[in-house]
Length: 220
Image (cartoon, rainbow, N blue to C red; front, side, top):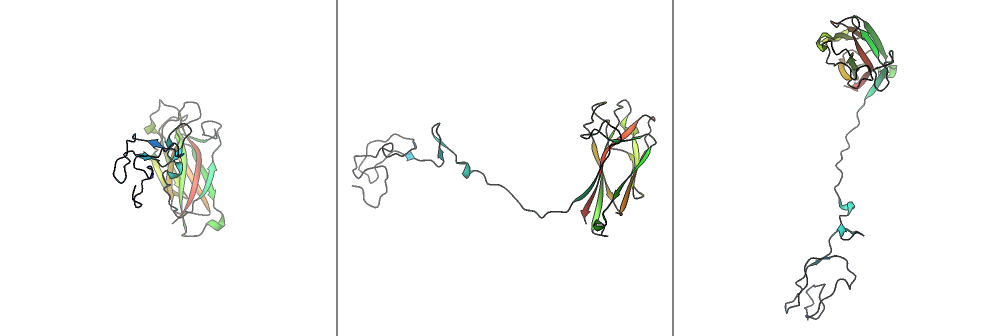
């Protein structure tokens, strides 16, 4: 007989007998074939393991999805970001996705305004950032280094010279290579005026397009 302090769940109390797991209703995988019992305290030489997981109708065990990888999260504080958005729609082509855009030919100038609600204009609390989505014309025969512009915000020049833009693609269609130009606004006002002059060294038929502008108000 097996001493009472031994736990051998798959043998009988007789050293010459073994339990059959299938008869006991235990589902699992038998990795080794059992051999005859010996006279040791735990004579089972077989390894009958019930793996962790869930049983699949297709046979065998699958990993329990509830035991999978845990999410990696962090709850950072929310930040304030107020945006005044201006869609530019003067010419019915090129803009993406609106299909519309404003255009400045060589030598042209244009101005756009952003009026802040009074409750937002608290001196010293906010700083501004202007974002302009722009692209050159689709006249690929004209070198891009001949295009330039002077941009002022509330009378302060924030850019004067060549623009980091490419010719619009696809030619004659809705351009898909617009780029964003970003400038800090040093002196926010109730009414903020953006002026752009096309100073390109190109013909009068060449142009620069502007899809939209944003004035973002960020905490200092």
